[in-house]
Length: 206
Picture (tube, rainbow, N blue to C red):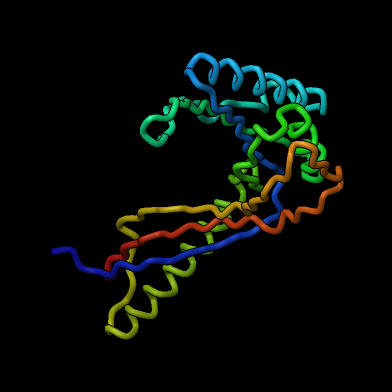
């Protein structure tokens, strides 16, 4: 049987985000699959072109999901098929959301949906390192306290396991009609992005 003490320490570090990710969906309902796919393709291409015109690089526009399915209708009614294409746009221009939204709405009208808006940090390496340091320090302090209570002296570390989580700031917004216009300076607040690391550390007795 292993002797010693196992403890869990956690460390959390926050920083301002430097990346904005926006997910747009383009949908269309048609009486057959071919028409649904064709219309969604045309409108998705129009949204992509509009975003490119706003300075978004092609590499920063990616397909997230594509689907086509038959909608439920009452018996005796004509069948209908819904096509959907979701795009994720990544930009470092955190204040440009209103301008991008306006361009996308102008290209797709009521076929456009805003799925999510998320702030993130592109490179979390430094944050994770700092969070690990805090987590290990907390784990060691706990182990020293428990060792003293039990009348032992703390020895060396025999094992460490890690889990980490990050909490990007996300917002949602309902779109208006096809003619809705959005101010290019539309107020969205990035807030703070948080990275958390938990370490389970086992110390032997000295």
